[in-house]
Length: 505
Image (cartoon, rainbow, N blue to C red; front, side, top):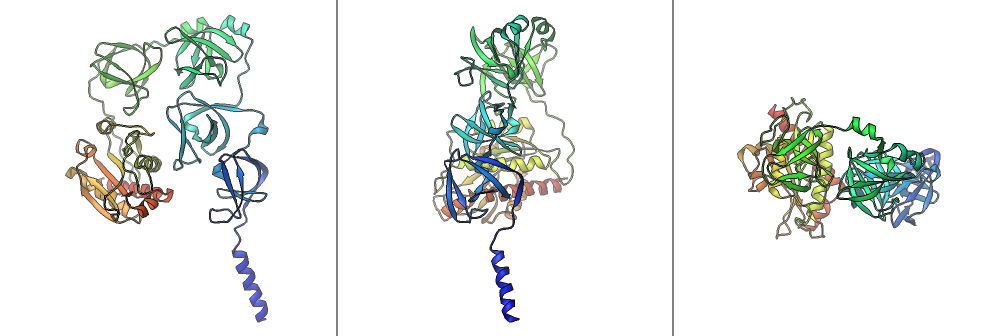
C-alpha cells in the first residue's frame, strides 16, 4: 500500500510540471511571422526553453492557443509577433491612415514599441487583425496600428468604363479624412499632394478605378476612386455647401493641421483675412486655404459672417461628475519632453521622452475608461514648448493637469518617485496622487513636494508634475521601463485622481 501511495504522489508531481491543456482552434488557421527571428519555445511563456526559431515571412499552422501564445507543430510562439494569414481569402485589404503620425507598433498594444509612423493619406497593406488592432505592411515595416485611425476596403469598387464615367462624372469629392494624390495611377507611384474630406475637384481623366484631378496651383494628379464620390455637374451645383466665411481678428493667428491647440501649425494669418468655412467642429472651424487644402482655426480668434467671437476661449459648461467615476471631468495629460528634447538619458540608455509617452498613453486609456475627457499635450514624438502645454490646459478648462516625467540625479544612488506642486492650491491634488502611487508601486516614496516648474507656475488650472523614478540609477531604470511598472504607475495615478475628486465632492 505504501508503494502505491508513492506512485500516486509521483504522478501528481509529474503532471503539475506540464502546462494547462490549451484551448484548441475550431478550425486550423495559419499565421505569418512578422519579426526577423521568432523563438520557438517548449511551452507557452517566456520562461520556457528555446527549441528553435522562425524567420520573417514564415507561415505556420496554429494547432491551439494558450493566452497570448500559439501552439504550432514543434512548439509554442508569441502571438503578438505574428499576423493572421489572409492570403487564402482572395481579397487584399488596403488601409489608409486618417491622421498624421499614426504609430506603427511592434505588438497590438499601446505599451509596445513604436516601429514607425504613417501620415494622413498614407496607404498600407493589411495582413491581419487582433481585436481593435490591424497588422499592416508599410514601407518595409510590419507592425500594428489601431483601427480607430484607419479606413479600409476589402476590394476595389467595380467601375464602369472610362467612357461611361467621363460622360457623367464632373467632380471627385473626398470621402476620407485624408487622401494621397499620386503622380501616376498606381499605389506605388510618388505622392505629390494631399487632399481632405469634403473637398471637391474637377476630373480631368478616368482610368479604371483611378481619376486624374486638378488641384492646388495648376497641379494634376491621380487618386483612387474608392476613397471618394464621383458627381455630375448638376449634383455639384445643388450639393455644394455654403457655410459662409471666417474673418481673422488678430495678426499672426495660428492655422492648424487638426482641431487642437497641440496640432502642427500649417499657416499664419493676419487680421482681416477671410477664409471659406468647410465645416463647424464645435470650438473649431475647418476652413479652405488658398492652396486648396483644408485646415483648422479656433472659433475664439475669428468672427463669422453672422456673428463675432471674443478673443478668449468659450469654456464649455461643466457636467456634474458621477460619484465613483471620472465622468464630467477633463484631464490633461502632459508627456514630458519630445522631439529634439530627449529629457534625461538613463544609465542603460533609456530616453525619458519615450517612456513618458508610453506611460501617458497607458494612463489616458485608464482615465477614458473611467469616463474622463482626456486631452494629451502630445501624442507622438514631437517637441511642444512649455507655454504651449499650459495653453492646452487653459483651453481645455482642465480639472487636472498631470505632467509625467522620469528623474535623474548626479548621485546614482538616489531612488524613488516624487509628486510636485508649485501653488498651495495644487497641494491637495499632489498629495492625493502621490498617495495613490505609493499604494501601487514599490519604489521609495519621496512624497509630495513644492517645486518651481513653468507648467505648474503658469497654469491657472489644478496642475501637478510627477517624477516616476530615477533613470540615473541603473537598477531603478530597469524596473521603471517595464510594461508592468507602467501599468502599476498609471493605476496609482488614476486611483489618486479618483480619491481626490471623491473628497472634493
